[in-house]
Image (cartoon, rainbow, N blue to C red):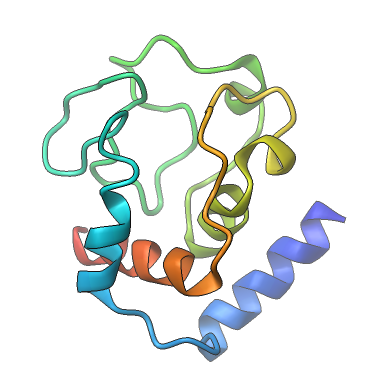
Length: 121
């Protein structure tokens, strides 16, 4: 089932989502993440840094030692589809993950934060 959802999300991201992504709005949404993550330097906090997150294999920041077994074994590569599913509800998307964040329920918030991440590449 997860595979089907990921494929559908990938198709949506290629064909364009229903919401136009807004990088500035994504930067604002990211403020919810700043307690645990940074995007502007390779410095880990409670969670790993997110520099270069797009296209990066999950659990691959070598300096971060607190990844869950579930994330290490996930085989995820962080792209728009994977991030969309994960950010919507991390605990549901990845059983056994450690991220305490409840998720971003609004599609436009997820679209915007992903556009923000993409703009930093």
